Image: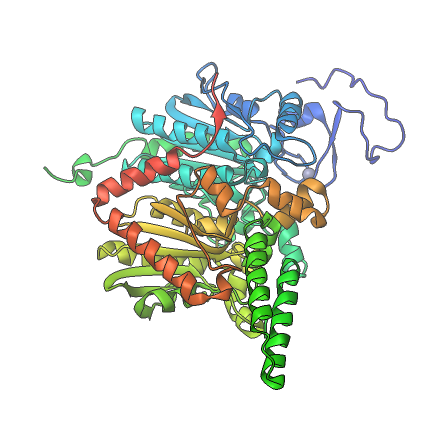
Length: 292
Length: 318
Ligand SMILES: [Zn+2]
């Protein structure tokens, strides 16, 4: 608690001004409320006024969810190449360098194993800050390897997606084929009767939504997360109508029967642990054996 | 009525000249056979020149040609006894995807494919070949029927993309495509996917997880439409030709990148110039591929299919 410490800021003009001194205040992208950063941190980056769950990076997510010191990262240094020598406005290599500098990440996904309240599991977390968390070859490969590790070690697999972009345009069809690759790995995981939880966070769209992220045995979303196949702007341009309120938000998906539940961030760790405890290992082994 | 594309203009002009001369010969009883023959040779040479040097953007124009043969055209021209199956048994019958049982040279198979409409009225019915979730669910139902009875599966891909709409999202477009990808990856029968026109992103891949991925010579297959890519990266849709080049979306590009397995030749000038020739090339290739694949057991097929997609992707490990 830091309430006794005087905040070190000077408010120039009205607090509703668009540009806030960085590092002190954040404006809620949902309700527009100005929130003191310390308060936002303490509230797990959830808006205290409207309950909007701010996007959090992959590293932050892992340290918040997993037991301290338990995370062992896989393929930490795997990096992207420019398989098409993409001739765009800026080169793919330039774009990658920019994003790496901006985020401190090498790519848009972090994978590894660790413990969640004592439950051993494999995790894969995409980070929407890195080229929108889009799935290129590295993201597809690391996720597939993580799933294969879950099979080898007979552990549950938890994927946490924050991917607004879906596919990585710069990698062309190599990117699209990661959808097939990850889904094929999920099919294997299912055949092995291993548990797959998919947690959808803001935003989960496009190629990530239309592949492994939609295939969880249990699909969970954070409140208000934007989840869908096509982006709202594309839909609006196609149908030339305004979109209904709350369209493609977690609550909309729950209402339409597309996800199992919405869990607020503050309850996430506890509830995930409970859910995992049900399906960690098959019960009634005899019913599941194919007979000899 | 013929519809010509911008880059076909020089050919069209020559052909008109030939036509005029022929008319003249008929009416005036003058023998211009020599001249006509020369012009014909010239036209043929010009055609070959133009069509062997198409830019990616020109190929896109070609696959969007309103006379391009569609899935049902190829089913009718390459297969017999087609029995169309309708509906996803849950919501509706999405006419942007067709499918059913048919015989390919006497061999029973199941076939599914995107279906575009030829005119405005039919396009409303077919939704321009852009499926809703129920379309993908219908296709999966039909493919699973094939697996259950040991019938090989052929899929024709021809869509600008899965439909971006409110109903599509309400009924789980993303999940429907994802389930197709997962299930197709382990169907225990031979599965051949052929891109006959536009392979538009996830909506195309939703029918595309085959043991073999084939493409017609002028077909394209892309992670995003060139217009969409141009709008995002160049901030202007008019840069679509540049985007089309950068995306490496032609059959020739994708064969080189080892994303696809085979390019099937089209008649000179594009598939719409000669449906029968195009269909006959397709039939030959489908038969050959199925012959090879039917030698493998279900388990071998699934294992090889897994490895095929497992290998896709380029990255650096240090
Ligand atoms: Zn708020």
